[in-house]
Length: 464
Image 1 (cartoon, rainbow, N blue to C red):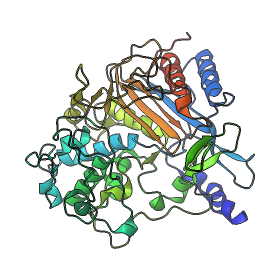
Image 2: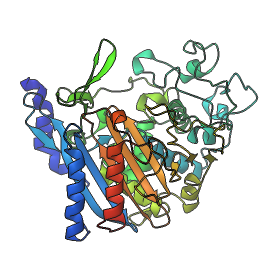
Image 3: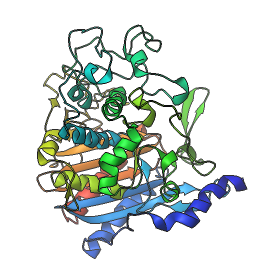
Image 4: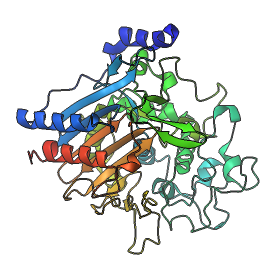
């Protein structure tokens, strides 16, 4: 057990002060509002029987960071659960599906360079035909992938590890050794005609990006996006600096599998889910002879990026400022406008897409009602247990992305009209979120509370 703690403890001792992002600035809100917001968020994190392992938040008002806080623990000493390392401004979280939005920034940089075209047949890039066999005459394009309208779905999986030596050609083309029954291709509608949120398309996106550049996806994203923005973290923890690795949050839940069933124990111990770098460093996700452009799923373009709330705040500001970050232009304003424009929207009958399945009560969740390129449009649609309304009382139509995996839930929300918004990262819950549904939306109740508090206090400056 001593060996289990020595790896991360040594990193923390030697490197914790070396990260490039500064400590959280003091709140720019009036002291009374700051205290009120601190109290409201703290109460959510420590609610009896509904505790959160950690919470990192940041809020922006009219292009300026006005509030940033962390609550709870980034990781727990396995030899002494009473010893908890607090979440900090530099804490990096595996932020789940917000990774898709970050990946899109890399895609758009390659589009601007003329290396990718959103509407070109992807077979031209991949070197093999990419067609839904149910609709063989309809090409699949990057625009389809980025808007979840490609007709690819996750029914046959969306990740193939290095040991399998899988080439995506063998997964996606009939007759390939990993094609199986072809369940990754939907027979429901041709590419471009139906929205179905999925992860597999993003593995294809990463593969295309590798193919046209000859670079591994994780390193390409660092060159295109993370380094220009000055962001620690990324898609491949095995290549992190010691300082970055020391700051990765372990994700937890109070749930376990018993006889194949999920059992939650809110009064029980926190159970590690992923990113437990206490016992050992992270593994390499690619073999030394990996050929870029064969299997971009290795690096998780759909959900494997680690960033801090401050890093996500910098991305929020990049979008708010039309592609400019700290005085440097990363993307053309026209590219940001295109990314955040409506590319798909549910029709009145819901026949052109799946808006998020059903909630535990069997009613439509209606969480996904409009989409841009790698970004969700929140239309402020209300309803108990369903709808994409972000804040109590409504009034906020926004763009951004949500994430959920391995106990983590996350959100990036931007109101472009006012250049305002917020981000949150939750490092795990002691309870099943489905047992505490929202009162005005399809989000869990604790997320409603977090978003409403950030919006009212930090963005609007309201005490009520």
